Amino acid sequence: MKKISRSQIIAIGTLFILCGICIFSSQYFLSKRDSLFEYINMQLYFDQLNEVEDIDVEPIEEIEPAPDQPESEQPVEPVITEKYAAVLEIPKINLKKGIYDIDSRYNNVNRNIMILSPSNYPDVENGNFILAAHSGSGYISFFKNLYKLSEGDYAYVYYNNIKYAYKITKIYYQPKTGKLAVYRPTDKTVLTMITCTRGDESTQTVYIAELESKEYYEDS
Image (spheres, one colour):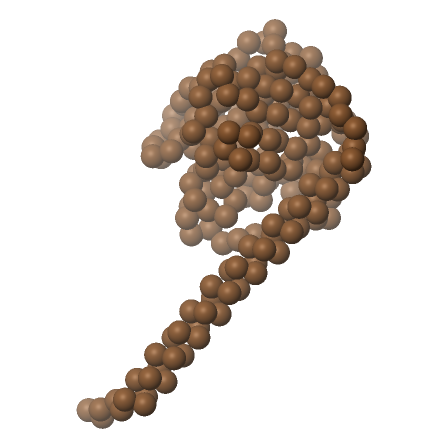
């Protein structure tokens, strides 16, 4: 068996080091690029809000659950070809993310925070704005920190020049059976957020937040 020389070992080691540097550098620049695209899209939303047609549906139905996001999920290309229909903000977990219209091809849990059907936009009285996103640790796991929320915490939705303030009033779990029931007061306007339960692959967590206030704001 031919013995590998010291110079060959050094050359192979150098090659591995260079490959590692290239991989980490590409991930860094991809992250910076995606952050820039997200910032641009957020600015587009606040600079010019789209009018979105309300959806005439029943406020409570069984809905398809959102699957968990595996750690091996590859990054998806950022989307900036459409303006956001709304923006979700949860200060406690440092989340601020744009949401596409329910009829958009980008309204997909494998790309973004998804508006589920049946759902109403925030301006529908006694309606239910239902959102789902992945948990886990993948690139698109936008609801990965929802587990840190408790009853009494706040979530905000910016929609059509109005900031809607919702207070979480109920958190409950449901088994993953292919359907998920939303339990909420039908005489209240609510925001529902759904994601997989942290540390439990058999259940999903449902967050019910009731509308507490709303205020108009001007585009900057």
